[in-house]
Length: 101
Ligand code: SF4
Image 1 (cartoon, protein in one colour):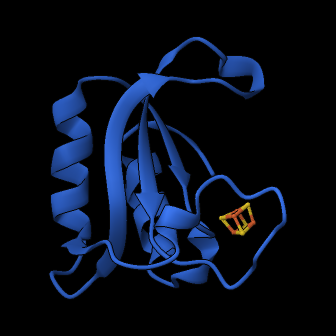
Image 2: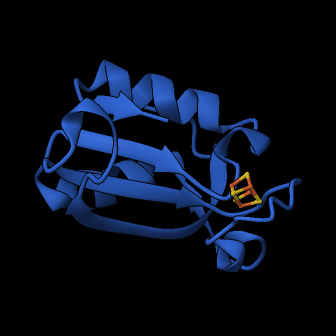
């Protein structure tokens, strides 16, 4: 359980098939955090630079649980740009999700 004040700005949370790494093809929940301080020339997620919705870690966890799969990828944007992401990652791991960043 995380504290109620632990919030993150989220662009989207969705279920898809993993397209990268050694878990390619496995159903995975993607948690896309909003914001990025970089501007890579090859970026294909500029829509995640701004906007989004503030969500508590508990609300994020409830949404992730509702997708019914064990693999979770936390992405962005640049997910490490939001300090509260560390608590979210810890909680996801503590709840036995298989987590990638
Ligand atoms: S979202 Fe990723 S690819 Fe796009 S600018 Fe940020 S770090 Fe680069």
